[in-house]
Image (cartoon, rainbow, N blue to C red):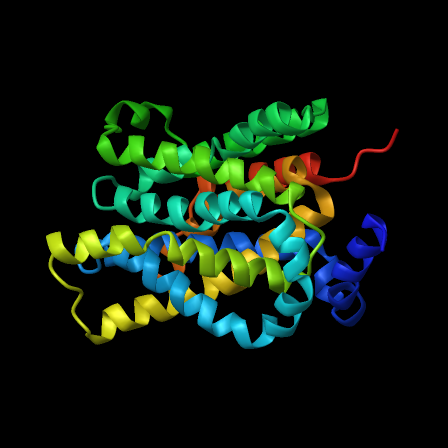
Length: 312
């Protein structure tokens, strides 16, 4: 079987039965919505659930949830996974184990505003990794779109007042989150080099392997930090992070990157803080203002410009 036939077989089950699987912009928007919720839940869980425990349980539960649906695909695709096992393990470590653990750890030290500002740099980091590993350069429209959406994010986060930049204090948590972003940007690009396997096979393997590499850190954390309380808020937090930013978001993100590439998908990172602002308005009772509308318009315009297909 040729590589093109393998790729067709890997993607056909998804593409032929589900309309949504061929809608990259909707998939990446769902991803951004789920990840915006993850940042809020992760911040709420800080101090209640240790970061390695939250990450380990998140991916362990996500693996168990997806395994029944992925098992037959895993069995079929195992020879291709085994042939690229080192790459698959690196992908699992970067996108699953390392990134999320560092993200939850950073939220113990930093404020949400800082992480949202830092996350806005993700498309630029993805572009650097794409250039290094794939020799793919940003087009002028993509670069313009990234900068435009970044400007929109800054308008929202700074409430339209650039003088508030002077009030932001970067700390240990910001450095940790910056490292996390660099690692996740690497994952975003590496997924394009994955073997031509079914999306469920890819998700199940990376979820399981990502959780497995956290076991030594989890043992260390259990010995050095207080245990998580088995109360309602903590269990609800675990349920959310295992289902939505894990199973739902990663399936959508991986498929979106597969359809349009890492550089065109990266501007959707800017949609995460936009959704975060909307959630603050809906759930925290904040009132929308003019800077929200201006910022949203800039972000959406930038994402449209950067993510749309360029024709020669």
